[in-house]
Every structure is written in C-alpha cells, then in structure tokens.
Amino acid sequence: MSLLNTLIPSFPRPSSLRDEQRSADLVHTVKPAYEIKETPEAFGVTVHLPGVAKDGLEVTAESGQLRILGRRAWKQPEGWTALHRESADEPFELILEHENAVETDKVAAELRDGVLRLSLPKPEAIKPRRIAVS
Image (tube, rainbow, N blue to C red; front, side):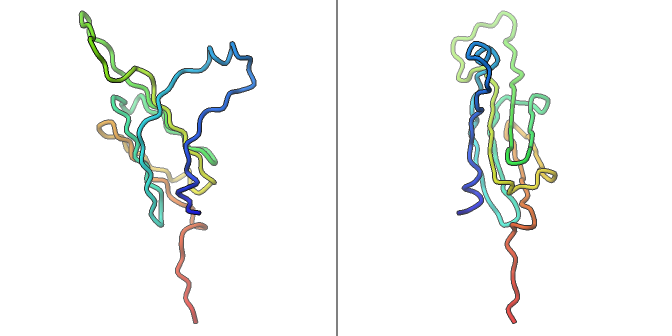
C-alpha cells in the first residue's frame, strides 16, 4: 500500500459535549478542492482556496494530521445588492491524516492567487534507498 493512500481526508469528530452546546460551537465549513502528488522525496498538496489571503490562512501540522483553515475577507460594498453569488462566505477546512509519513518540521507552504501549495517531506527512514549488491 502506497503512503499516498494513507493521506485521507477526515472530518472533525464531535466532542463529548451535549448536543445543544456542540451545535452552538460548530461552524459550518466547506471542503476545498485539492490534489495530492507523491515523489520519492515528498508529498505535494495543492489546495484551491479562492478569496483567501495570507492573513486568513491557518496551516497546522501535528503528528498524524495536517489541518488547513482558510477564511475569506470579502465584504459587500455599501449600496450594493447581490442578485446571485456562486459561493458562500463559509470558511474552508481540510484535514488530512497520515501515518507520521511527513516531517512536520520541514513542511513548506506558498499561497498565490488563491492556490495553496504545500511540500510535505518524507522522513529519511521511509525514503527509497539503493542497495549495492556485492
């Protein structure tokens, strides 16, 4: 099984709070479109976050989990009436789980024109090695 198959989306699990408290605390989020590619050295993740600026982006990497949260900073102009809007103002959230197949200290991220590109380096222990045969 490829390590790429271990990067699967997950959904936030409800806490042990009562249902009334839980529904008041949860904010509806939208799962953004994303793509994952694998090379021998790293995983590459491309996430589409239209309308999200750097100050509205939060990327956290913990053991076994990568979380991306993006908030849009769009404000309706004064005196303007919307007739139709393709997307809601809900924040984007993407949670990817892995089996510690990523060096979280070396994750690199770049946001340009609403597209987030992440480089998730693999630990040395799981990179392929060439073994000399004598």
